[in-house]
Length: 418
Image 1 (cartoon, helix red, strand yellow):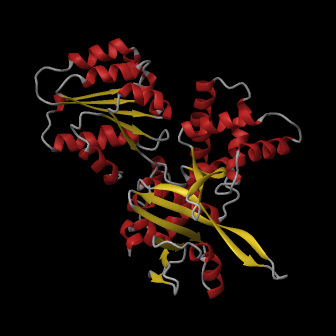
Image 2 (cartoon, rainbow, N blue to C red):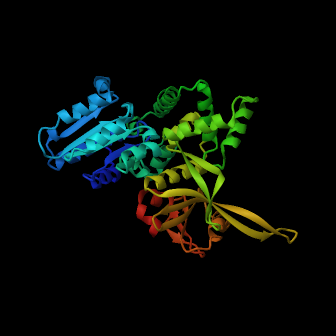
Image 3 (cartoon, rainbow, N blue to C red):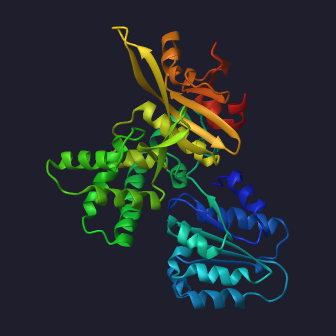
């Protein structure tokens, strides 16, 4: 089964010969190797590039383990160059090579090389490593399948596809598994035997059960405001004793972010136009992975829909924050009280901004008023959008808020400008 990932392929194509190392990042098993070694390589061949001018090396393959030595890798690539025509170098899992940034900087000095690499953790995108590239590293962040990509190979209705997607997510291998129990087993094993095992080994964690239990706490409260102190208290309350501290919890959170398993959305004061340090929200990079941690319990439609919308916005290269709107109203005693209303997403890209609220059901006037209350209290001219799960035609409320169906949002990116 061929899954077209044209959004990412086009990004890679636009970056050809830009004098930078193209770095494809993302959680393990989300399709980075397939994108680079299948789709992009096919594009090069279809464009007339000679196969001998495409140098490929999968560094996580034991057969190629000798090239994890930086000097051996550099010599190998140079030995493939037989003429002055353009060569394309595709290296998979480059983080397995010590001092890889020095190797890549050296290869960048060769005029006829265009370099593409993949990596499964964000260590080599840290500020220190990027400094080593001196502004010559260009990231393409790859996510698990979007709903549109998943639906393109699903073979059923959009409504049925959504029910599958919200529960089992968009890891590419899932599309080839028909049995639901096998899907669950695959996702559980992937999380335990690949992701958590990789984190525990990489960071030499001693309390290897703790990071898994913390992951469960985050999964249970996905999309809820939190911070390391709250998570520490929640974690210790489950244990009914003090077993860890805030610094440890904070380091575990960074490990999970580093592995691209979770993302943090900061809280933004819309009226005050500044960020609020705490609390913030965590979202999982894939619904299926989140659900696997909870043994496919706690499948609340609202939380899973919100998580999926967050990931879709990130896929479209928006910067996504959680919005806070301060309002004042009179209570039953006639006293003015301060209230804080939440906007699910404050979405920015260049000079574009959208305020987005997610709601499973807004089938009554009262529901519309409830879900749009925070949006109505924003006093600027940027677009305000309410996304509902029910499949309806787009429409505007009397307050100028665009109401979109989830399917329109997920399948038609242009609809946010309707």
